[in-house]
Amino acid sequence: MNKNILEGIKRKLSPESKRRLKSLYERCVSIFYRNNLVKLAEIYRTDKWNAHWYAQHYQRHFHVLRKKKLKILEIGVGGDDDPKKGGASLRMWKKYFPNSMIYSIDIYDKSSLQEERIKIFRGSQANESFLREVFNEIGSLDIIIDDGSHINEHVISSFKVLFPLLKDGGIYVGEDLQTAYWPRYGGDSVNLNNTATSMGFFKSHVDGLNYIEFEKQGYSPTYFDTHITSVHFYHNMAFICKGLNAEKSYGTR
Image 1 (cartoon, rainbow, N blue to C red):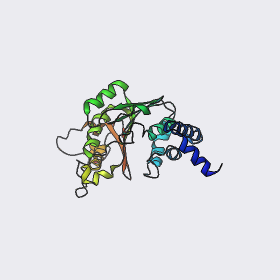
Image 2 (cartoon, helix red, strand yellow):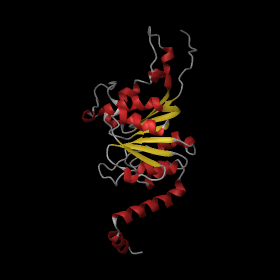
Image 3 (spheres, rainbow, N blue to C red):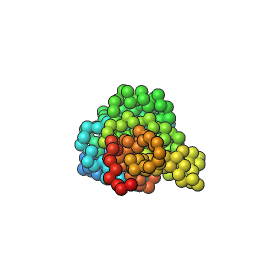
Image 4 (cartoon, helix red, strand yellow):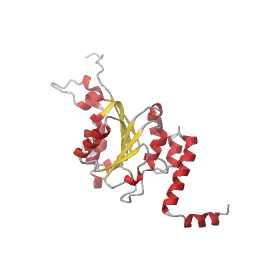
């Protein structure tokens, strides 16, 4: 069909018709790539590929979980304050995890983007009471992805509330950690071990993996020491895995 004719048809379509056609296209094409998060990120036009390069890391960590029945929470829907924009990654997760329920939170009303297996709550990730209300409604979580405000204080406070609510074997992901170095987000590129930044905070838990080896007099392990089993860093993102970190020391002191 002539390109000009196609453009003419597009101009005549209502916004709702365009949205329906886009949704139909996504559903049809994604059938062929439902096992491939890189391809799905491209089809759904999320910023987890091309803008960022996160999809390849998600593929590495999530492929063994794909067909499980999970509860997944993503902080941040996208689309700023437009109630009809955003949700691309939620639809991507829905396709990739065919047996899972996808939840999200956003400070703006994104309820129009809800669909079967996608539920969205309105509220701030910086509000502990709200986060606990969401948890009380949906129950234990298997995967949490923080793609929210990227303000360092929010990233850290959300983790402190939500990580303990993950099931054992769960995975917590922090995205866009470049803001850990940007002062306007509360970051610090001078003191790279500043635990008030998201990267400094997550890095501080790496030593906790080996807390059993500490010879610090009177040291009492934290919840994170005993429940973080691995931390994986990639460019601007981190995966924190939950479980029981209770291996004994077999070293010679």
